Length: 250
Ligand SMILES: O=C(O)CCC(=O)C(=O)O
Ligand SMILES: [Fe+2]
View 1 (cartoon, rainbow, N blue to C red):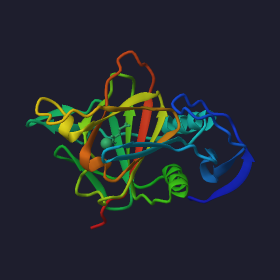
View 2 (view 1 turned 180 degrees about the vertical axis):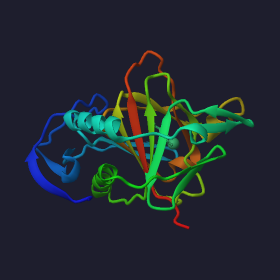
View 3 (view 1 turned 60 degrees about the horizontal axis):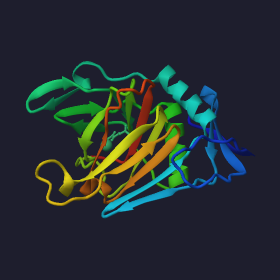
View 4 (view 1 turned 30 degrees about the horizontal axis):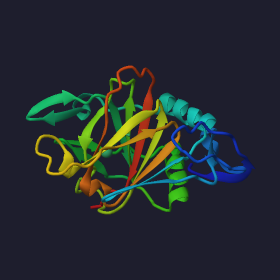
């Protein structure tokens, strides 16, 4: 089941390039998920970087050091499966397209996720996913009842500009975004500064999402800013992203 043991252990180093501050952790927590023999070593003193702009409110840290992030990524590749067929399509201007990545959702019973005229039902939590969710809840103080998982096989796979502002999301609740594998740029564009009809000039915010990192997207970011994961054609490695969310229970 979801039982885990938390012990103190010597810290491991991590490979953050994004954080300007140096790491000074002396210890870390181990969360041992016994049934799957997966061990999560979480950096104990997380170095949160605050990313603030007009109505943009995000916090970033490296949650899992490299060894543990590698292990979690391996476990994802071993045990996750993704939606296929109609559940892997989006409708754009009336035409159905395959999404340019793989996707699956897990969550509490009865929850589903709607986007671009598609509704993706949540599969049940697995012990592995609920252990990750619980570590993130412990570290952030927020609960989540749903996770959307996106797998980008390489730099060709991407996600277009959007806001996570669906009605099924509990308004104001943060979204916790865990990244594993290939580091990728993540862009925020202010709604008033997008495309031809831009009414203001506001600089795009670019964040490198590293292996093992956690980005907390907090209110009101998703009201005012669009985000995307653009193509980076020269990147060859897999990236998996999990966005932990709180959905409205009907
Ligand atoms: O892969 C990412 O970092 C983006 C994920 C995202 O924006 C989403 O799932 O809504
Ligand atoms: Fe999103």
